[in-house]
Structure formats: structure tokens, C-alpha cells
Length: 369
Ligand SMILES: [Zn+2]
Image 1 (cartoon, protein in one colour):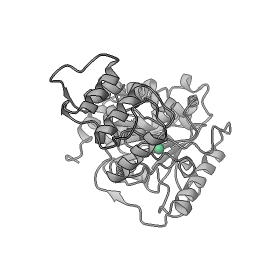
Image 2 (cartoon, protein in one colour; image 1 turned 90 degrees about the vertical axis):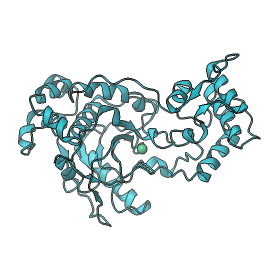
Image 3 (cartoon, rainbow, N blue to C red; image 1 turned 135 degrees about the vertical axis):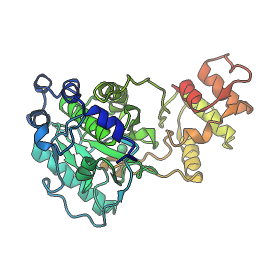
């Protein structure tokens, strides 16, 4: 256990933060008035009954296992890695839309539908994500063995939900589409409770709570839910015994139809990268999309493997996000005229980057935000 990175902190947390955590996480009775009738209530009422020898920083929520929702047996062996995941990743399922069926039966039904989709259409061995949360606030296991392995706190069930990063991420699919509307309170409360439990089990800092688009060029988990991740990190910092996290800039997601300085900057950066015929008009049209898609393909950017059914219908080819920006944002002193124009586009008309200014990823993110 000594080698386990989360062990020391978790041991510290065992000393009496459980009640505080439950209160701060909205697991108390008052926070449940509008929630779905049972899942969080069960967690608040009976964490001890669910516990093992370990007293957790955040209680384990009631999570319905693959056996309980009637999962099919996996088609291939479940891969269990001998290390903890680095990041906890938030997704949205998109399908079956924002239903008002908040029942447990419905929650189990979407788990079966997702598993069928992943096994029969994607050809995966099992459900891609490790966990699912329904709009009614029910927590369910996704890939087999995820529940027991997180309880163990030292290993990681490898899933399929973030392209190029599946050995380091544990993914939570949240039922619904959150591009324009907010999540139901019941889902939010359950997401907070589940992330708190996983972060406590694995000793992950709140900075490592991410959205899918922090890794891949995808809409997931939707602008609204993604925009609430800083709030999620802040809600969990105190219960997990961490200082309030700083709000740092992320790589923006640019999509066809977008316009403005960030698009213009991207076009200059693509021109600097060899796409010299691309107009820098600030409009993300077909030519910009084609250039981004070509660059991603040439560079071997792994296509995202989100669990969302959405991705079988929506073509996100040519989206410009976290896996493409690093390819086109040079580090160090600005030497290229197109890169200089990109910086100018971001700083505003007539403003130039100070002479000798050194650019790095953090500086580019600040400029682009
Ligand atoms: Zn996703």
C-alpha cells in the first residue's frame, strides 16, 4: 500500500471528514427534497452498511451493479491495470435525449441499450464507460468489475471512452444532452457524490476532474455540463481536504459555424502549419474544417471513443479541440509571421505581442480564452 499514491492522503481523510463531506456534498436530507426518491438517500442513510474495513472520505453511493441491471457477459476479458487512473472524466450520453422518465427501470434500460450498442455496433468487449448516472440520479456500473475495482482503490478497469487515454481515465456517462440545457438537480447531486467517492478512493486531486473535450475534439459533455466542471471541482475541494482549485484556462473547442478571433487565430496557425491557401476570415467553414481534419489525420490523432450513442450519428470530424491545439501552437518566441498574426487576432486589433514574448501552452490557453 505504501506505493499507492492516494494512500497517505486518504488515510488522513479517514479521521473524521465523513460527516463534513456528506454535508458539503449535499447528501444530507435537506439536499434531497427535489431529488429522485432513492439513490442519494440510500447513500446518506447507509454508508456504513456499504462500507468495508475502510472508512471513506466520501461515502460510497448506492451503485447498481452490472448483475442488478441485467448486463450481458463481456465478450472479451476485462483488462484490469495495476495502477490507479489519473483522471476522472465526465461525459454526456446524448441519447436517448432528455427524458422525463426518472425511474430506476429506465436507468437500467439505458444501461442495457448502451451495452448493446457498444458490443454489437462498436464491436467492443463490454460497455465503454465505467459508470453511468441517469437523469433520475441513479448510479449504475458500466463496464463489468468497475465497482469492485474502485472499492479496492489501487487498480483500474480499462474502459473505452476517451480516445488515446483509456489507460489513464475513468469515465462517467451522464444521461442526456447538455449543449443548451442544464442537468437535473438529481443528476448533479449524484455526479458530485460519485466523483467524490472515486476521487477519495483513488486519491485524485480535484484538478484531475475533467470533461471528455479536455482530451478529444468533441462536443461531449456539452457546453453547459462542461461549464459546470469548475463548480464541481470547487464543491469537492473542501470535503476532500484540498484548497480551493484555481480556475485555469482550457483549450477551447471550435466547431463548424463558429466565428470570431479564436477562429481567425486558428486559421493563421493552420496557415503557418502549411495550409497556406486557407483564408483567415474568422469563419469556421468547410475549408477550415477540412484543414483541421487533414491535420488530425496526418498527425495520427486518435479518434475519440466516447461512449455516447450520439457519435454514431454526429460527425465531429474537423472539430478543433484539445488534441489539435497543441499541434498548431508553437512554443517559444514568435518567429513566424502567421503565428504573429494569430497572436494579434487574439490580443485585439492593432495590438502586438511584446517583443521577445515566450509562448507556452498555458499562455496560448489564456490568449484563446
Ligand atoms: Zn464523451
